[in-house]
Length: 415
Image (tube, rainbow, N blue to C red; front, side, top):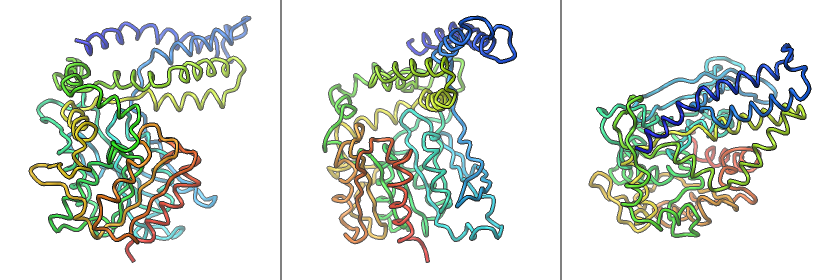
């Protein structure tokens, strides 16, 4: 019922947001006579703020059409390599694959970036992908909003997530592949590679795990505590709702994106309120660069997806409440997950000093679990002054983290 009420409120707000958008343009457009009225700038700024607070935020595009390498700009194309009911495998390909201006892309190591399925879209890793493209073939998991998946496609569980990762690894080819998992997927990626190793399958040359909840008993954060303070039935009865009739996934049980977004905002309400006020002030002052930065950030931050209920509840129970992976008690589709079975894959773990989502030591815990990997093939990086997002996006990612990742991958790349 809550989801239906949300949709009703969204429909009621739509005319207001359209009206606010139109008025913002009428009072702000240079060619409009209304823009010359006294106070027009403040009126236009107020209307745009109202519009952005009330509007729907659709999934953003990756928008990576080119990359700059040493002052030269090269085109990039986005291709869908595989499609599953709940995920697409995308490849970002430098258009110069067969040209002579750069070294052949076929000589660059392939990297599979496993994006989080935890509220935001994979486009949150846009900066990660763009930076990796300088030196690698880049693939990424692009998770599909569960409300857009018909119930005829069945459920999606954490076991299914592990299966998807394995299938994508096999499709790309594990022989010379490197896997980067960011936040939540560190757990299913470690499980996927562990199971492949235990079966005697080829595994990727390296795995880079960034800010993930491998063992949430280490330095638990507010996010971790929330998952342990309530029993599993509370999450199922409180945050799980059926998709309304106006979506293809009508009737599917999900953790709705709008509830997740409310949780994101509630973590730092003062910061978001101040950010919106600063945006209004920037518009009034004519500081268009800062205003555009605000738009870009919230276009991404406010775009959320619904998560399948089964997957979400599995994650709460297995990862945050029962800690089955670090305790050695996790079975996936009847197979026991044993990271010690991994021997031919190098490991790099990365944590941010100020990460308030995955606490200190939670990702580094993978080293103790992966005892079959030689010590010389295991590394850990703590990024000073970096929060959760800083280890995969922004200045610290580009200047401090990426050089280490590039060096690590190059060390284990196929000769």
